[in-house]
Image (tube, rainbow, N blue to C red; front, top):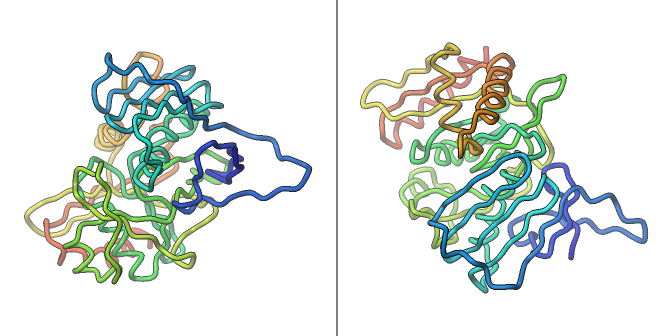
Amino acid sequence: MQLFSLLGKVVNSQVDLSPIGIPVLNWGKQQPNVDFTIIVDSRPAKVNQYKDNQTNVNSEYGYFYKSDVALFEFFKGHTLKISPLTNKFDLDFLRILLNYPVASLMYQLDFFILHACAVEIFNKVYLFAGNTQQGKSTIAAYLIKKGGKLITEDSALMKLSPEGFHIYPSYPLVKISDQANTYIDFHQVRGIKFSSDQNKRRGYFVDSHSFCASPRTVDFCVFPEWDNGMNVMEKLSFIKALPKLMEASLSIYPLTREKEVRLLKDNTEFFRRVPLFKYSRDKSFFSLENIIYDLKRISR
C-alpha cells in the first residue's frame, strides 16, 4: 500500500498511481488520516451477469464493469475495490480507474461530477462539458498550447464552497487524435496508445508548467457542439441548460427518484453560480482559431 494525494484527499492504494502523475505522499512515523482506500481483490471476479460498461451507483454502493479490464466496486465513499480481469496495471488501466470509478466514489462523497475537461487561461477557469466526440479535449490541448493550464481532461469533480464550485485536478495527460496533434503541434513525441479508447486517440503528458496541481474555482461552463456554419457562443437559460447538464452527468445511471432530486438540486446550484454557454462551431480544426476571442468575450 502507498499513500497518494488525489482530489485533495489522502488515498491509500494497492495500485501504484504515480506513473500517470499522481503524487506520492512521503510521511514519517506520523501517518495522515486516510480519506479512502483502493484495494485489489485477487479472487476471480464473477462477471458473467455484467455487460461491458454496465454500471449502477447510489450513495451506499455502486459498481462499474469494464470488459477485459476489471469490475470496480464502490462502498460509501471510503473504499474502491478492484477485481481485475487483466495482469496489466498499465497507463490505460490507471486512466480508466481514475476516471469513472473514482468519480463514482466521489459521488458518494457528495461531489458534483460532470463529463468535462477544464483549463485555466487568462486567469479564468473554463469547463468544457458534454457528450463524447464534441472536441472538448482538442479544445483543451489548443488552449494549453496557447499558454493555458490543464486541470482535468475527462471528468470534472467539483465541490461547492462559499466561493463557488471548486474543481479538483486529475492527472497531467490529454488524449487527442493524431490529426489534432498535427494541427495544434501539441507534442513532438508519439503519444501513448490506449487500447480501450474507442476514439483511437493518443495520450500526451503535459509538464508541470502546463498543469494546475491545486483546486480552482470554475468561472464558466461551455458546452461545445458541432454546427456547419459560423461560430456562435450562446448564453443558456436554465430551461436550455438543464438537459445539457443532465446529459453530461457521470452519476446519472440508474436515474432513481432519489438521484433525480439530488441532480436537480446540484444542477440548479451550479447554474446559479456558474454562467453556462452553448458553443456552436464548424467541425474543422480551423474553427479553433476563434475560440480565444470567444472566451475572452464572455469573460468581460
